[in-house]
Image (cartoon, rainbow, N blue to C red; front, side, top):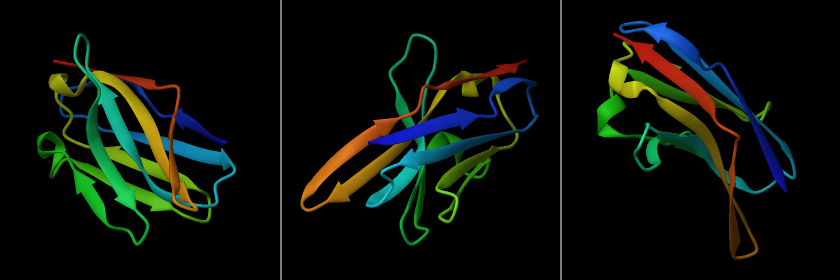
Length: 119
């Protein structure tokens, strides 16, 4: 099992910045990617950004150029630096990790952290 604990959400004005952190613990051997999803009010959960082993990153078009994902492998921690925030970024942000071992894979989720951007 992998446990994911997020921190760093909150309320910010449009144009401001926030930094989310997510620390993985437990059986972290075999984690192949860590990243962030979000669920805006009344909408489905969507990918924000992911960083794969080898530091390859992927971003949703809506956040490209404003958000930066990074990962500290020694700390098993992934970060999401969010700049130039917009009201439409308001959502619950979830940390995600995927683990693969011996041909099987597992998905793990954090509890979510609220990000609210006021106009």
